[in-house]
Every structure is written in C-alpha cells, then in structure tokens.
Image (cartoon, rainbow, N blue to C red; front, side, top):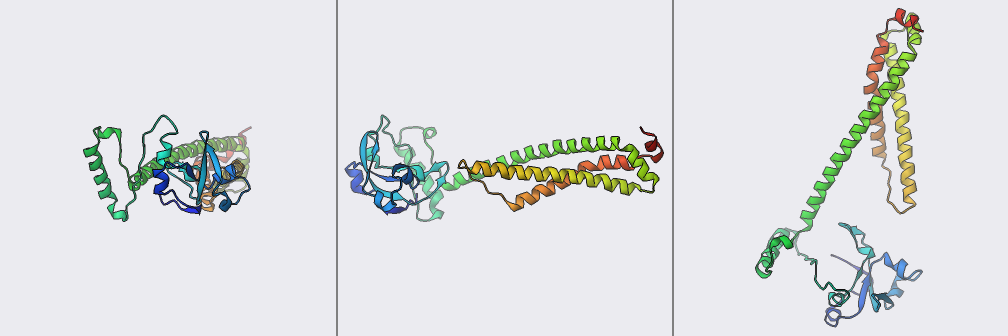
Length: 270
C-alpha cells in the first residue's frame, strides 16, 4: 500500500513470528492518543487495545483516504497478534503489489487461477480486483452521479425559468397602460421587447447572485464543522451565464407579448 514511516519502523518478520504486541498508528491519531507530544517522542510509548498494552513502534506519514478507507485513522498490528483479538480469526483481504503496472492484468489472472485450484469454494465467495478495475468502477459511478445531478439541475432551471416567465407575464398585465403610453409616445416594438428582456435578465442575475452568495455562505459554515469546501471561480461564472440564459429564454414570450400590444387597447385598460 506504499505506506511510509514518519518516525520509528515498520512491522518486521520477527514481530509476526513472535506475535508481538506492537503497532503502527496513523498520523491523525497522534493528536487523539498523544496530545501535545512530538511524533518522534511517541515511538516507544504504549496504548491499550482490548485491554492489552501495545508498544508504538512507528507513526505513519500522512496519507489521506483511499476508497473509503482513511489510513491516517488506522492502527496496524501483526496479523498473528490480531487473530486473537476477537472470535473471527479469518483474513478477509490480501493486498498484492506488482513491480510493473503492465503486469497487473496477468497477475490478477494468476491469482484467480491459484485460488480456483487451491480453494474448495466457488468463485462467488471471493473476488480478485485491481486498482484499475476499481478506478473504472468509480469513474462509472461518478459519471452516473454527474448525469443524475445534471438532470436535477436542468429540471430546477426549467422550473425556475417558468417562475420567472410567470412573474414577467404578471408584470406585463399590470403595466399594460404604461406600455400603451410608451407606444403612443413613439416607442417601437423593439424598444418594448428589449425593455422586458432586460428586466427578465436583471431578475435572473440577481437570483443567481443570491444563490452563489448563499452557496458560498453555507459552504463556509460547513467548513467550521470539518467539511471540505472550495469555491471555483469557473463554476461561479458558469452559474451567472446559466442565470442569464434562463432570463433571456424565458423572458422572450412575456417580452414579445408586451411588444405586440395594440397601443389603443393598452391605453383603454384600467
């Protein structure tokens, strides 16, 4: 797993053969188990695991999480010692490292053939996977989620656009006399069309601005609770562009309706 040591040493064959009560601890656990203690001073100290004292022989370098497993929060002990911690003495996972990534597929097939020959159980009870296949699976899941979120976002934009169109239609109805006066004073259809399109555009830009500020605010608040949040200027620009397009697209019909009003009929409106 390419784990590296920041202080101390790794597990040795002697630790495994002697079932030694020693352990490696993840980097994030140092503050929890040994508060205000330098990492180099942690090596040699003991911690309690299931009532037994284990000597810390090494502290792992900060690695982060991989496939849902955060190594920085793990404690590693010899598997010969771990077998006696609980009732389950089976080994559930084995990790194999190849010297060349080109050999991954061949090594996977060799392991599958070996297990098939030596284990008297069906292949349904075990699986052999490589990081390439896991990455492909994660990529498929990510793509599916992206499509799902894109669909939800599209529906939200359409619903929001319909709301903007209704607001603009109400505005046209309430300002019919104003439109008639403007046309009577010489305003052309194009002028009325541009006026209501600009109003629709401003309305959506203001909504987009409020949405962006609200999102950044909520993300900043969540950061205080330990969640990761990074605002992207590119995404913010795309948000404003999307808001503007929604304002233009859904503002066309109300603007066109206002532009084609007959000035005489508009002036007669109460």
